[in-house]
Structures are given as structure tokens and as C-alpha cells.
Image (cartoon, rainbow, N blue to C red; front, side, top):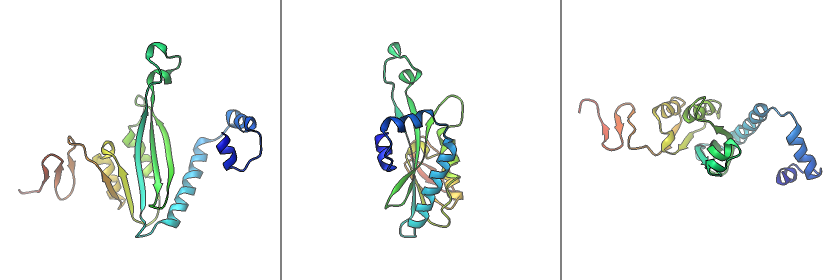
Length: 179
């Protein structure tokens, strides 16, 4: 809170800033959309053919903080996962989207990432989507390619991707039609 207060150049006492965030009704979605518009504006100004747009997709797991027998809150027992999307150029990356992921009721991490990728509009600038092997799914790669973007990521050895003009399986390599 202190860092946020200093960054805003606000001279209110720390408890006042904390109370504001604790008691105020803030529209999180509107705030995120405003942040995303600002990020995209910066990126459009920085990106060029020699400085392409980079979009990094990753997730992290915050493990259980206590054994189940000592947990007083669900977060202590279950831990939690976060999906993060960073966007920018080689000069600077910005946080574009961060969200807690809940396995049970709702979309997969890939679907959540796809929802966010669809909100990114950087015009005709070259775009590279960077991800680890978890996100190297046919669905995500196809969406990236359909937008004219490029995908860079590892592929798990158990994935089979249907790509034109050949089928690719990491263990055996490409298999060309008619061969």
C-alpha cells in the first residue's frame, strides 16, 4: 500500500489509503479495461517491424500454506493458481491481465488465455506469442495463426498438432501427406 501511495504521489496517511481500498466499491473490470487500453496504447507507440509485439502467457501455482489438518481457510488448504499475460516489446513488458484460476467451475486456462488474446488489438504490427508447453495446444496455436501472429513455445512430447501442410508429432517429427 505504501508503494502504491508513493507511486500515486498521494500525501494521505497510509491507513487512509488502506481504508479506501478496503471499503470502496471499485469496478475491477472497468479498472482492468482502462489498464489494458493504456498498455495497448504504449505498445502501439513502441512496436515496429524491428521491435515486434511480444505477448507472454504463463501461470503459477502458489502452494498450500499449511497442512490440511491446520488449515483455517480454504486458501490454506488448497493453494491457488494464477494466469498472467504480459504484453509489450523487447524494450518493456507490461502486465496485461492477471487472474486467479479455479479448476472446478469454469473455463480452462487455455480458454481464459484465448479470451484475453482476443482483446489485444495492436494493428498490423508483428506479434509473437510466447508460452510454455502447457499452452501449446492446437486451439491456441490455431487462434494465434488465424490472427496472423506467430507462436513460440515448447511442445509436450504427447501432443499431436494438425498443421498445414503436415502433421507434427514431437517424437517422430513431421509426416508429410503421401509419404
